[in-house]
Amino acid sequence: MSPKLPKIIGHRGCAAYAPENTLEGLHTAADMGIEWVEFDVTLTKDQIPVLFHDDTLERTTNGSGPIAEATYEDIRQLEAGSWFGDSFAGIKIPTLEEAIDVLIERELGLILEIKQTPDSEKETAEVILDQLSRTWDDHERIRITSYSHLSLETALDMAADWPRGVVIGYHCTGKWLEAVEKGELPEDWEAVADYLQLSSLSIDSNLCTPEQVVEIKETGRTVMAYTINDSDQARVLQGMGVDSFFSDAPDVVKDGLLTVH
Image 1 (spheres, rainbow, N blue to C red):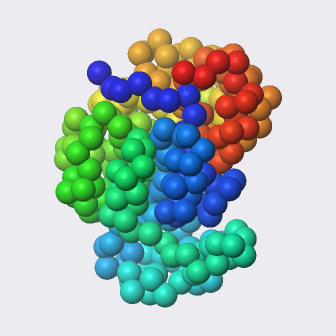
Image 2: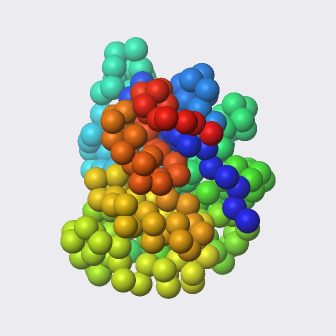
Image 3: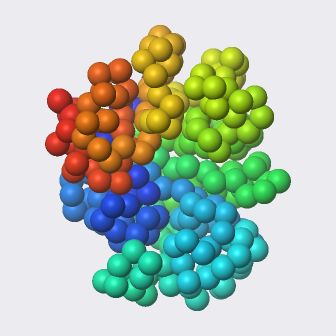
């Protein structure tokens, strides 16, 4: 039985109020009373798990090029806050280990999204999960998610007692992307979910329909939607039966929901 998730989950920490995927974002979420956060984890060239979303460095740092081609030492030289605001100038891309220390200190639950590096979905998941297993032992306050079915299969093999969830959106590939572009759930979603023993599906909020929510929830799984920063949209999705909301601005969503558990 998977632990019950809170209604609102801080997206990439608390990305409306602090730079995404940073320790400052985690502290900001905790200061706002958020119980769980989500962040993305990928690998450097020398296989150090770090919090980072994009394939390349340009958007959120003063670096450039693919993060998969940068060593950890390269990453530590970068600045990852001034793009967001002058008050955050000088902050760094954190390692997974550093982030876990903050989560434990602030008593935050975690949705960890594995961001697979090209052609290494299994290896990426193995390194991240190995690191996580050595620093995190609270199985009631974690969920492993990914677009990558292979990464989730690796998570099932390595840490079967940690709940898992698949992400559905425009980063899907193959037949799953074809279904997404038609506004449908993939035909084999339930078979995949059964095989991977998934507890939840995270759906792009712009693709979410009442029919999809009903279909998923009839299998006993949790429906999570991302990224909701508008109170009206939150209420619409709540009316569909969406269980949890990823939000950059969790205070806005909290004020918009009819009830918060």
